[in-house]
Length: 395
Image 1 (cartoon, rainbow, N blue to C red):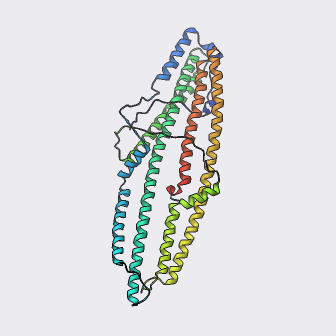
Image 2 (cartoon, helix red, strand yellow; image 1 turned 180 degrees about the horizontal axis):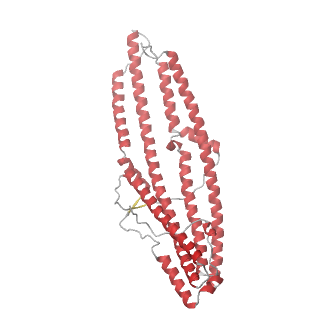
Image 3 (tube, helix red, strand yellow; image 1 turned 180 degrees about the vertical axis):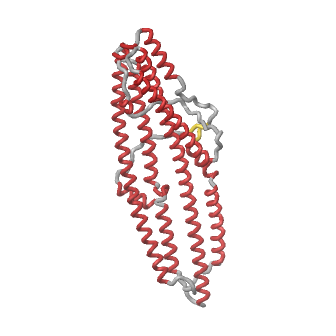
């Protein structure tokens, strides 16, 4: 499936440092006045030849909210959960009717008291089951939303890589044409020219592989939101880098534990175990009272273990975010340095003291860093969401 995306905007890291640069002396040695014009035409043609994707004006914008809503409507698992809630509402209502406003008094016939206690336990169980099911619906909704956001983020990340690869391919094509010019003048061996050609064709193959990856990413999103392969749309990309505000990891741990649906669910299990004890009536074949006490202790141990696991997870994610923020700050510094270098080269270029190729190299270096910053911003945003919502990973 091919998607038609907006025109590219350059970026990337200083991978460019590994690429040999054609300097001004080489250019003067291989190109006369006529050839200078021809090479400039090559550069202009390469820069405009097949490296941009024109926007399809008929393709509408698909926002995060719209995609999530479509995914919820398309999810049979979510629909099943909604039906489960309706079923539990009916069971709760029946359990309430069975109580008939009567609560065990602890007096009267023992069999009658036991029956009332069982009806009360059934009502409490029905109420608890409904409450848990409604909570699970909210968690499922968050999980589906997270899955959709990840699918969209994956696409945007790959499109970011494609923009960068287009720029690098453009640069490699220009270098190849320069190498051919040098080879014709006898200033470059055929072996070195073949190496340049191999490098260029290798990048072409990498681009083809990336296109397939993009197609796969779109297929995954389409399966989530119920779109067919032929449906055209453009995606919302609201990636913004926002550093973590709360730097107190201990406070974050407390916040995550207090707001965790997993912890909430375990606390509900403890409530039910406590109810079993408080309303215990021995029935032949049922678990003894001491077994119920053990059940309660086990649930409390599970709760303590969950809290320890969440604390460890939160601290690990926090450290990852700290590292991402340091990397982003370093990229910001590198970008400023690269932009200063570009200004210097541009001044030399305007004065006729450097070549088109050197200008292209510096522009590419700036754009590479910008693309890497965008990539880090996407990783940072995802890590922050996991920090505050660890249950999205099953925690």
